Image (cartoon, one colour):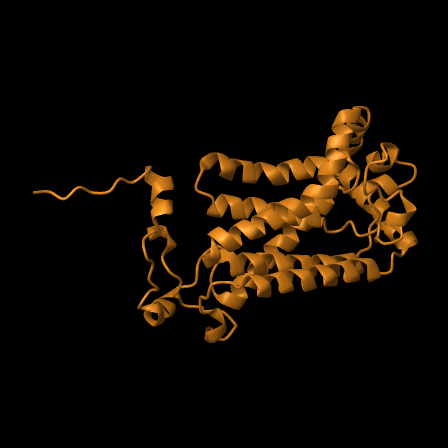
Length: 291
């Protein structure tokens, strides 16, 4: 592995960059993330997410009224393909089971896996990417509080099928032991979409292999199909998720003065490492001294 050195002209580069962020410069200097600090941040963040999500008053009557309004809006916008797609999924048990377990598990598994990958392999952009995810999640909690929304599967008179309940999938909110610990009216915005898009963008921005980058982009597409097919979200909820992610990126830029996947100016040049060059140009071979 080739040794990497921090840039020596950081101050001049900062001046050329223009806006340098709202945080003090000392807080924006590059330093390798420490695993126990990041683990603590994630644990506290998830605890706050769980407490905040479930502490919001469910307000069932308001949430159902909002659900009817969203359904009407989607009918006006001709985005009402959800019901037919939901019925198709519900009529195909193996597909419904796959989507149900996708919905219940990958939301956390893939997000954690991408965070660990960034921490280990792309530490020069990890903090910026993590800040986007945290900001987006907090904005999502605010959305749950300000706009309680019933998901399609809980709306009467619209004939949506709750596939989690129909096939008794693990994690079904029809199970009283699960439902009593979860706010069922936290549908707007869809954090499933916000987190999936964050994962896709991170993989596209940071992966070297093209097929991995393509898979990263397909992941939020698959998530959209799942949340609609299982009647857990409207398409407009997904739009809300995309919006909070966009605002999360904007907040990170305002705080740091650079993009989430742009390393700080004093970060080592990781593009000089041998493993990066090998992925880009093929395996390197040691040079042979010439006589």
